[in-house]
Length: 507
Image 1 (cartoon, one colour):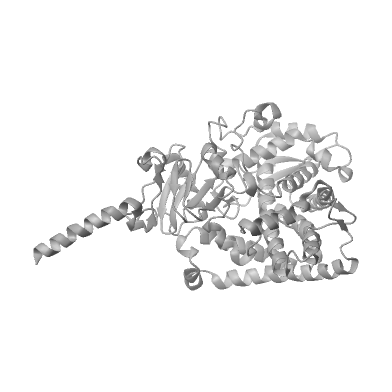
Image 2: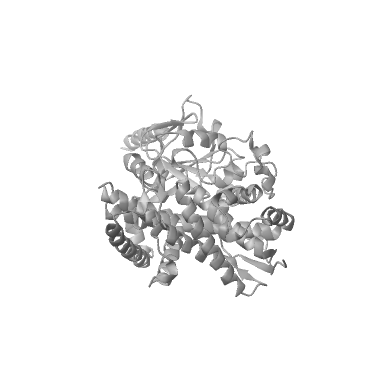
């Protein structure tokens, strides 16, 4: 009898060893392999888990700040090589250099977003951010005219109006210590609301509740992303802030839904005559919603689809631009010589109210400052993809459901492409210094077919605000970037609110 159990145990061990060649049994995921059959460790770094269960317990119940530190630690451990994690949701191929990211960005098949984007589904549905394949192609084609140059000119008028309102608000604040986190977020959300929905946020009942709800949704998603167990809806329902999340999402959906319905009525009255779709020529003040209503009239999208795209734009655009603008102001305060160069560039511009898109586009050095800020503090520090079938990539065989994490923050701090990566040097982006730059070394707006559709929109909005502020104030430091605690969220965030001192310029 004892001999029988010994033989059975030996057979079981041999069987597990065989299975373990293709599966990390204790981590419950299929292994990534090398195309040439060599050990995986020769191609990438394999991050050892804290337990025998792979990396399943490495990120359990971390704070957004601790998660950011942990991923930076993994990048340091891997010595600038891309690395692999083994978890319950599947193997994770983490890319931290431009050379490995290139094939992902160029791929026409690796376009399905990763599991982290599933956390956004209750809020943005299957909008442009999350959709894939045919639906994504249709929506992308549908929304592209929204960012046509002629339409950006109308958005420019909105950006200038809101920038002047921002100055008026700053004028009444205590200049010795200005909380730019709050005022810039409000500025960005006002811009997005008017360009997306065609209404001034402050003129609408429920605006304050909408701002709060939008912030709450982002905070809950960020915390949920720090605990892989919360990725499972049943666990989030039972043990997470499900009710609070649901309530906040209902507030945002009801708010945007009412505005959509009202604007649809106005659209049907004038039969969409405010836009010439063929030439993207705008006859009156235009909003992204007008494009969607025009498409709805042609039967190309329904009410739910319009809500998805509006919520996607509202949610994705306001935080990315506001965080970038906050970091730019922080950097300008810390580097007065760079701020002075920006001021010299804008000092002789014509009256702010009549500045055109061309005027803002010609601000080369200011553009370099924004780009260098995005390099060091990318609004979207991480993007993800999911393999919908077995995929060969960079000499690796990735099983179905492998997650691909592309760490934008690490790619853009690679010393191979950016010497002294922790030093703020806007000159890196002058035309003569970028001719030989790797095409995927600087990717703050992603790259390839799924790049950010609104990058020109964002740059124009940020430049308008900076010109208004810098022509009026000298920005002085209250805090330094090195003292900040960076956190993962929907965007890169800081644990602290950001403050600067404003000194009115004597003209």
